[in-house]
Image (cartoon, rainbow, N blue to C red; front, side, top):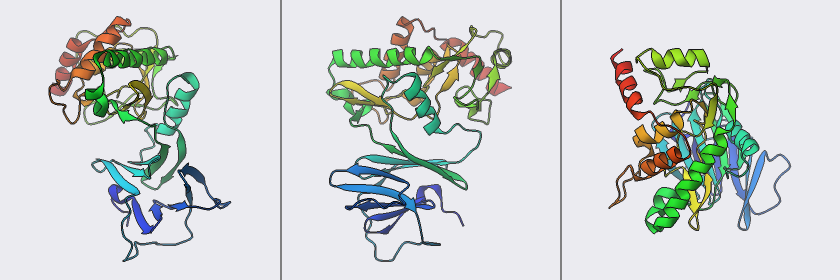
Length: 313
């Protein structure tokens, strides 16, 4: 029987963990030739390899190690563990219709090398779930660093993120889609009961956004590449500057109007947990205003009407 998603990683030795069908070990020697992936940390090394054990279970006297920490749970759909100080393992319920994050990261590294993204260490799929091991980007989340930043640094970070959005948006497609042509993961725009939207041609997209509303924002002739989850938890800062952007699973080609509309309408981009003396929506308000100065229109009034009409239908 398959384990729950949040039990996908289990300690099976003092420095050994079972990750799905594979094994992660911390070693202080030369990695074996059968290692599938390796990464260094201080005076040791972590390796990923195939297991020689069948039906491995947790030994009764293994003390849990603080090297492995469950840092996020997304219900029954996702979980994230920190492995040591330099890596994360993201486990998600596998859906062949959803774009793999590693492919999107590789794409972004190619089209926008000036944007720091996580290094992919290894990825694989086991039956009903996918595994993605990523190198940590050094720094703190924007949310955690916010109160320590000066007003000028906050403004500079906002400008940098808007600039990155503009860099990404220069890459266009004739269809609303992921990097390899799959639907995009955007529940704010997806049909009721689904988190996936598309893939759509220009004509299909126009019909979709007009079906529940008399008006539709101008779509333009192409769709722009965009990371629609630029909340303060997905922006890493160091020394008062943007060090990188994480969580690229929802990135894809979207209508141009969505670039500034998403931060205008999405509480998912709020400070979480809240920060005393700041509005929860402080960051997304700043980002939306900055994106408008870069020439990206926002259509929040249309969106709210469209969303209400869609829910009624």
